[in-house]
Image 1 (cartoon, rainbow, N blue to C red):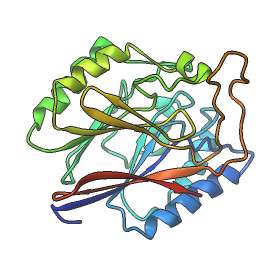
Image 2 (tube, rainbow, N blue to C red; image 1 turned 60 degrees about the horizontal axis):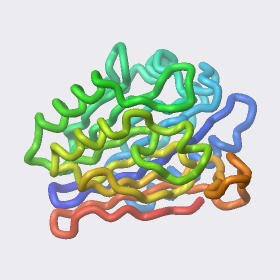
Image 3 (cartoon, rainbow, N blue to C red; image 1 turned 90 degrees about the vertical axis):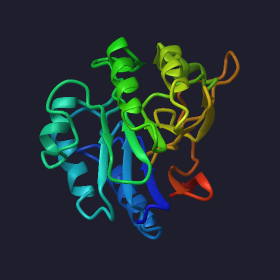
Image 4 (tube, rainbow, N blue to C red; image 1 turned 45 degrees about the vertical axis):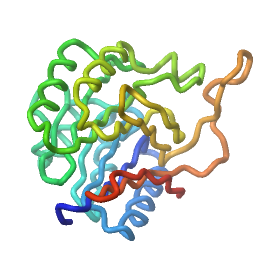
Length: 252
C-alpha cells in the first residue's frame, strides 16, 4: 500500500452456521479471490453468523485465520455484540462496550463504521447518539477521504421485505453525510444482492452476500424473501489519488 492507492475487499452477509460449513467455504473462497488483488484491508459488513452462537463465531475466526490483509468486523442484525467481542479479542479497534462503531486511520482513505443494529430486531436504527458519534468521527479528519460503512442500506431498495426491515431514521443519517463532503462512498450489506443508491452527495453500494442471494419483490403480490440460484459474491473497492474510487462486483 502507498498513499496514492487503497484496495478494500468488502464481504457481507456470510451467515456462518455451526452445523453447516458451506457458508464458511464461501467466505474462504472470497478471501482467496481477494488475495489475487492484494487488498490493503478486508471489511465484513455484518451478518457474520446466522444465529448469534459462540460456535458460529469460532467457525468465523477459523475461516479468517489465513486472511490476506487486516480484517475489520461489523455487526449485522444476526450478530451478538458481546459474543463477537469475545471471539475476537485481538481486534482492538472494537470498543469494549456499547455499539461496535469505529474509525480506522491506517490507510489513505478512512474507514468509519457505524453499528446501527437493534438487538433482538431485524431492522436497523440510526439513533441520535449514533448521529452525534458519526458527525464527530467524520469531522475529526475532514481533510482525508472517508468511506462510511453500516449494515442496513440507508436508502429505499424498493424491495417489499428489505425496506420493511431496513434502516429507520435514515433521513438523520443523510443529514450527517450531507455535512461532510469528504465522504466518497457509503458501503452496506443486508440486501443479499448488489444495489446502488445515493445518500446526499455520496454513492451507496449494498454488497451482494457471500452466502446466498435473495430475489426482488418489487410489485404487490410478488413473493418476498425468496432465495435464488444466482451466484453469491463480494465487492472490491479500489481508490487512487488520481482516479478516485471504483466499486467492482465480484462473483463466487
